[in-house]
Image 1 (tube, rainbow over the protein chains, first blue to last red):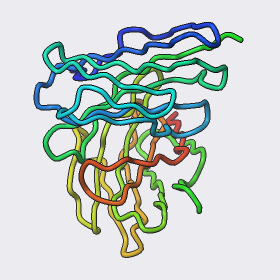
Image 2: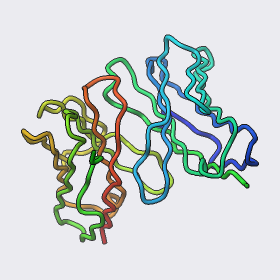
Image 3: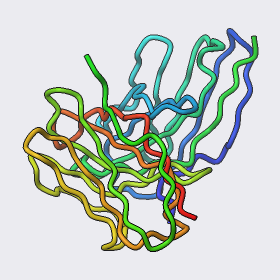
Length: 112
Length: 113
């Protein structure tokens, strides 16, 4: 069973606009969440994380929002740049934080 | 500083064979995790090793095993290969065992014929 879901396989956004990538989870024990970016032929690269004691975390152009009651998190990229074009994975962990469950990924294309 | 390295890059095996994949973590990192990523899916957790001991295991059969060496490098072994084992195998290292940012290697692409 897929405990972390990314329901949008792909997303296209104009350069300079906001990209919003969504992620839903089913396990209420998840308390630590991460976003990764993956280019072809490379391993995932860590972007940003958030723990369940927060509802927002910001790092430059990237902001992650967590809505625990809805079991939903989102990644906002503002402004979007062509170099942001990649597959984005969200991942979640429960309690111990040593086993991460990944979503299926969203392929973002930023159009120049 | 060198990132996480994995070898080999690509591998082709036939059903029933055995395979060993290798991972070297970032210098100073003591935790290594292994993931399997099949096409169109996200990475699935297989194992975590920390300080040379298994600290976590995902839902994979006993054909999958791993170990971590005193220098914190790690091997993933898969016995009696099945067609369904064809995937990208990713290794990730982190400094600590819990709640740590994981740094991924480029992966080993395994094809089972």
